[in-house]
Image (cartoon, rainbow, N blue to C red; front, top):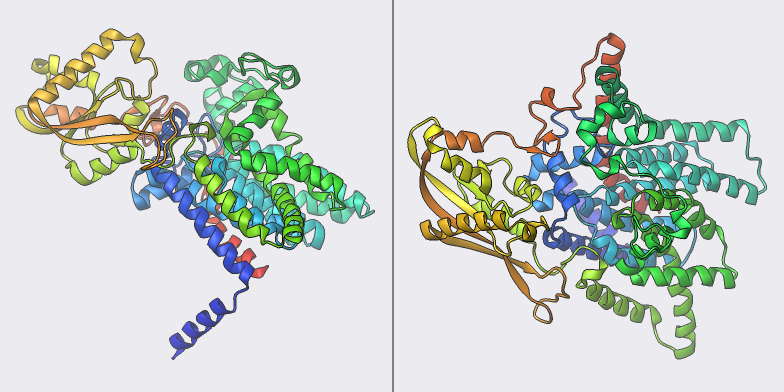
Amino acid sequence: MDENKYLEKTINALFSMKKETIFLILIFLLGLALRLIAAINLPVTADDMHHVTYAINFYSAGRLITYEQSAGLWHAFTSVMYDWFGTTQLASRLAAVIFGSLSIFVIYLLTKEFFSEKIPLMASFLLAIAPFHIKNTVAEMDVMAMFFVLVSMLLFVRALKTKKTLNYIMSGLFLGLGIYTKTYPLLFVPSFLLYFVYIKRKNKEKIITRENSKKIILFLAVAAVFAVPTLTHNYLLYKDKGFLDLHFTRTLGLGRNISEQYYGFDAAFYRTSSWAGLFFGDTRHIVSGVPLLLGAADFIRKGDPIVFYLGLLGILFTFVSKKDKDYLFFLLFSILFILPFLAANILLAKHYLFLELFLIPLGALFLDGAGQKISQTYKVNAVKIFVVVLLIASLILLGLPATGISHFYGESHISQMIQFKDKNIPKTALIVADSRMYRGRINWAFQGRPYLEGIDFMNLANSKDQLSGEDINVETYFFECVPDDCGWGTVKDQPDFNASMESLADFFKKNGVLVAEFEEPVRSEVYYPFIAGAKEKVVNVYKSELMLKSSVIGIASQPKNWWIYDIGYLPKEKQFDYYITYNSFDTLLNKIAHWIVTLALVLTFLSPIYVIYLIIKK
């Protein structure tokens, strides 16, 4: 009986939903579908391959951060995804799928704090179909970090309106989660404080009061809690071994002579800030000498021209109309610190996702104003026209290589390789990977299985008499790099290396059978299924039965090292940044830091529920 009542209430609730809520849910589902497609189809990048392996066993190994991120929440979350769903391409990108899709709800709520009527709904639609945001559905931290930042901003804006202390606390909590996901959200802290001052002055309220100080201190203190893992790692590492992680080394310079042996391979270790280049250009960053600020903005112009130009029109519209200017100041304060800092230090498109997000409400504002004019003049439903045109334009942009990682419409060969391995290759079989494949791709695709790079396999074959064990029949799968260079970009300059891999491929062709071929769209060309562009063959798979020494499987099963970590961080005591504590205080601090990691992970899993609660509450 109770079940029938619950079902009846649910049905009644569904049918009583407002039209706006129904549209919002449909927009969310559209955005989710596009991001799922992107997660499955988008090819991998060098950084992609870097992070996917660093996430393996991250949480179980008791890690706090990775050396180059000074953060660890994305890695902890993704390591749990691997435990639940396996180490697949989709699992590695679930953080971007989940939090990128949930950002659609958050941008709706944030826009609603500044604008009314149809503008928030249009903003959510613009984000749902935003090509640059969709093409960042990869194994990176930026989408997840900006989700937390957006929620924090939403709650901070509400805190200023409602004056509720709880909103300040929750805002600090989400900002802290963002900082523990990626360090650059720390640069939003002064932006929050400036907006606080602006609103207080606008409302002719006192800025420095005991109550205001209490709320701001609470906001900052809660956010600071999630910096404890990073600070603890660096404090204990320096105390034990005399050096810090990469970012702390660059900032403080402590232990640089010791850490150079570990970080010297990373260009960031020697990178310096180019503050003059922000306005006068710096050919080290942009060959043409374009000012770095313009170069940063150009990432969004190319990646999402729809939002870029609509956002600029929205800024102009705000100036010429009688609309409230609060959002303009919010935008200005939000980018005031983070934009110049990032542009002066690192020009990677993915880090400028915040520009696209902050322009979206202004783009929606312009569309609403233009739509009203068009509807009044021509007696048509301009909003419907905008939605159709924008959706078509977005689907076209997703097929262009210039808008970011390509291609959206064809599944990557790495994803196909992993699926083939999981479904068709026995766990006892030996995998041999063509060394012309980028090592990060090899490690990612085949980790957890007995595998060898082609060069290593040839070396073992040439020293067979020196290996222990009996000759046994080994089912072997060879993955050939068909175009001769699968991610390195340098094979053309190494003819002897290329020739050695060709000879290995010929061996497997003669002594095996072709069992699979993997294609993907040509990355440098436009691609739309059945309409334009072509696919190229990237990988061939050959199956062979080889007589090998039994010890070969053991060698192939040994943990692999990727850059400066062993994949899976095992044994953890042998990792270069493993530290030990020498007193009870440090031991307690280390435990607290790990407790905070667990707390952050729990809050991350609860955050979708909280966002849905905010939507229902609206």
